[in-house]
Image (cartoon, rainbow, N blue to C red; front, side, top):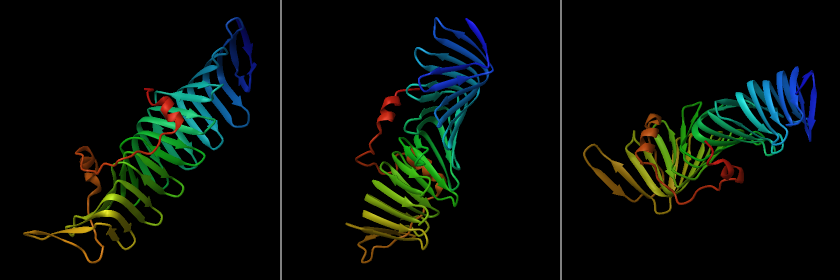
Length: 301
């Protein structure tokens, strides 16, 4: 064992510095203390109070006030494992990623520096300037700032409109959502659902395809068809392709074919989770493809 003060250790493309350290040359191990810094080029910088580094496996275990900076993304946690060769980092006791106004927190996290992808598991909350996203499994790319969902997900906008899906993407820059499983959009008294759903929050434009249902609980009207379009600005909707309307009166109901495809609909945002758990949301026939990194970690805790 060699005791080192203000030492510098280098391996491949990684540089390790600290106030003090114990170096075990026979084992190729380093225990570093106070102001620990790992640098990898000009992109990745990791800071902590304590570090144990295995030069054989190239695995660094960092504890206490861990901060990882990768360009414009900053990840903070108290326990972090990082492989300097694969540049994959992991935390399992809670962490937070901040990237250009977006803040993501979760219990478990996996960060891939080469692709700038981060995977979040359990109690995931993504807060953007315009929406709050809650889910249990999410991928986020800090370069594109696009989120990817692989389970029940709720997106609540700043004006309280709600999007629900179990598979899809949401671009936090353009505020465009593309969903592919159990999809639902709610705006006050109106809702739109379909096997696939696209919504542009900035334009207030929604489009649903296949098994489309547009409902207004206030006016007791429902439109069904294979293609639906909704405009938030004037609360106007069209449903076409085998479209029909259900209109409920005070004491009876009637079903009639529309001559013009238009409608309105209502569903409270607070009923969304109840409907999802009860299986009231339409299912679809296909999922969005999962990227390779996700398949590699899908069985991790």
